[in-house]
Image (cartoon, rainbow, N blue to C red; front, side, top):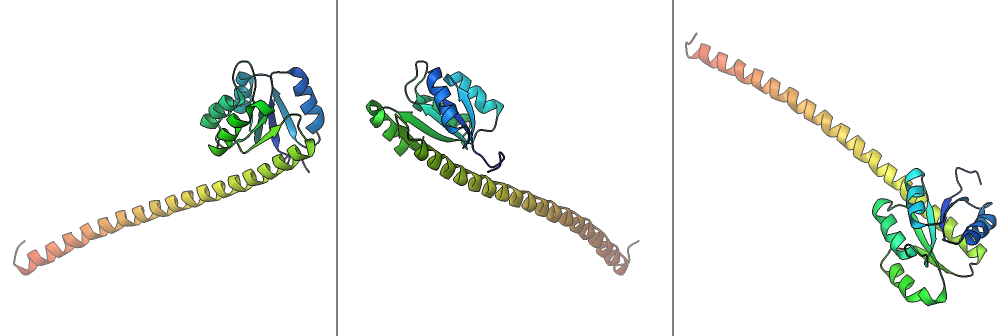
Length: 178
């Protein structure tokens, strides 16, 4: 798979060891970006087009769910996933039901499952982006059509004015006016 087709995955975790382990496990499957905090993650989202963000739920400055909420406001197209321990299931299930996250993974992660889910999400995201681009192109084409019709209507108005003036002059001539 060429690097242009590989998903760009942002992994967010406050523990450096987890970041290194994720990078080592998935660097052949994804273009991996790493962030050690929510602010770093938000900066990465601003700096680069991220396809999928996987965040740990338990971090000191901000929970993964709150990071997902914040990222959804500014980067709604990014597919969001949560990595969680058993104790956080209720919170993560609520976020899943709320539509905040696409998937969640339990610790310790299963690499093959993460690869499968990220590639599946990336395929959906590519299809979404393609459809969005098609619709935007259709809108632009429609706008050009509307602009052309407006221009034609403007010419018709001028012709109508000329026709009205011609009819008024003819009527004046018939009635004996000058």
